[in-house]
Length: 521
Image (tube, rainbow, N blue to C red; front, top):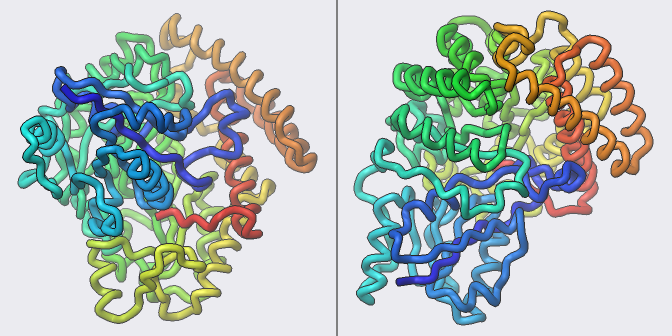
């Protein structure tokens, strides 16, 4: 039997968290990464597992030193902290193994002080295989599954091993993989282009497990929820049935491709399942950039990108977006075009980043062949690409300009209110039914949401020190309450205020270089 500790490192302040606001919301972290609780569920029962998410609690290195195996996972944005943790563990004599998205694309990252084993790609088969071989003293160094995971056999994650009350939101996964072939994307490298999906029974079991944790807002972390448009319909219907049976206790948000706008049936199912927002990789208003990146799904007929965003909003789902600066066809003028597009689209939250060539992607291969990569791990420019039509300094300054202008409080709330103060805009299931008619349990939850919204708003005003922001927050929330009376929507608007403070603070500190430059890749 092995005593196992698995660690998820702390994120640096970036779009991935709400670092500058999360404590004011009474939480320690944004949401749990999906892999921690899943790895625990994949561990055979004869072993003991302790999960440590450094975003929610400090790492107890003394505890790690007593473990037989210490695993580290992490994304690219966590790679520096991954290395620091690994060095500390090795100094204490720990037996370390490393997996996750970053090691999958950069297998040699720890070669200067290698762990005992690395895991490339998915680990549903290789993690149990490693544990079996470890007991026999015959484990390998590199593990990679021959076949992609059969999602119908994935167990329910062990949420009970996480301190779920320390997170603002929960996280679930319905599917993996994306059918598209964006040049810069590592998702299809890791998960493939054939979307694989869980069964309705699995999804219902995970909804039950999440509900038992006390979480009421949950991010469905699929990289493209509608990658398999036919199969997801059955899943969404199962979610709808579960929500109806339980009085709609979970509010959901997710990621999807822009062709969702062309699927009225899917939009309706998502609304009935109580999805209130979706993140969409729009990337650029420039067709030249989209064509270059092979983001062809964003150029298909059915209207302009702006019209498609508005169709999704009109259905009752808010849109967040990802935008990228630095494609080969981009010159300095792309910065203002991007800012203007986000404004016209009524998108409050835009995750803008500089194009980065992630190892193993087609973009990385192409730019390496063209001699246009910077291989420094700590680039002063925040990205490893060398752009064609602007200097690296111009790209970086454009990035900072986007951050500052998109999260200027007036601009941010003008976009937010353009959507939320539209009398015809209703979000989630209430775009089809009046909230007080859904169920008694829903009505009770809405009333609790009103109390929570008032408490959170008061806490934000108490903790925010910048007077001009306090004035803007009071003015905007007062304007919102004049238009909308739904309690749950008030809570959602207050969360937008909290999200603004984090993004504004991040933009200010990053552009002034008082925090480390973090790109969004």
